[in-house]
Length: 285
Image 1 (cartoon, rainbow, N blue to C red):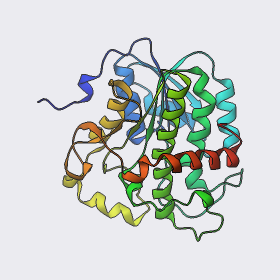
Image 2: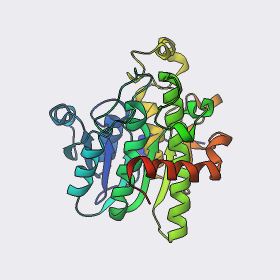
Image 3: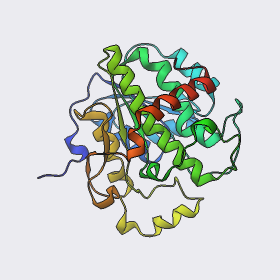
Image 4: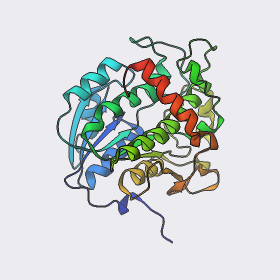
């Protein structure tokens, strides 16, 4: 059976796709391929000049807008300025294993970038969405010991890698609860998860986890890593599908629908996490 590639993307003309963190890496590859398929692609990036340079010369329709997903003020302004239908939102922006720091809102930067900001952005843009939300997660969510009562690292001693794993488990639980709410409301919008396996990107360049990038023959290159995101964005997958590489351990390979860790299917914890995030942000009631 033939393996799915970007060449199998359906015609996307007339569709609008918003991708956060699309100025480089997997986000930029995703933007390039969706535009090639005919979509109008909006790159939501912190550095708009860098974003415009990244897509200059690429065929297709691109719109570059400023967004810092870790800054809830920036997220609110971005959502308020949005007009018209949005077919696909891809929550791609992320950081990994960074030192402890707080945003202007007083939130943990890593959690805000990977989870809290995307939570707020998704909820604020839901009235515009017509098709799906794709949230990029990680297989490392399986190793998380998420503390819903200390989501923002107020009482625990901060650990960069633990915070990354927790933020990625939070995205998996977010998708689960979001899909439950969408289904209950009768919405046709679906929430989908995608992970690239382990891809040789710059995400972990500053972290001890970057050691794995020295073994590229064991990993997905960025082009193949982006396939899971593209598949999740364009194929007819069910709500809360978990798309990742088809190889052993879902580390590398071509995209297919798999299953998240058992902790990512805990409906009670997903509901508690949602309410904790509402309390933290004031969004998503």
